[in-house]
Length: 103
Image (cartoon, rainbow, N blue to C red; front, side, top):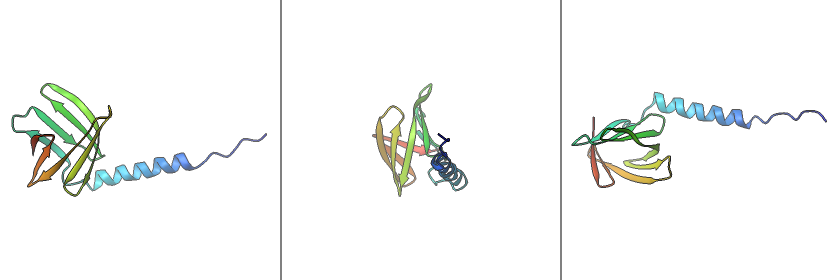
């Protein structure tokens, strides 16, 4: 029996993902960057590739995952399965009872 032709699907998925990541890096969302509580204890870094990192105190990688912004609303999906959300109001991020300011 001859070898079956490989499906172009994996290549297509990789290409679409790569293009989406490139677009995100060249056309960043206005909320990309570092958001910090007034005391500096909580720090959210929104990365251009749709990922985020949250630091708490001296713990630099307390949480990591992906996020999506629609209008002024943000949804978070932590890599462990935890979900959260927030809203950008007047240049301030309101998230889980916290207020974070752009740094």
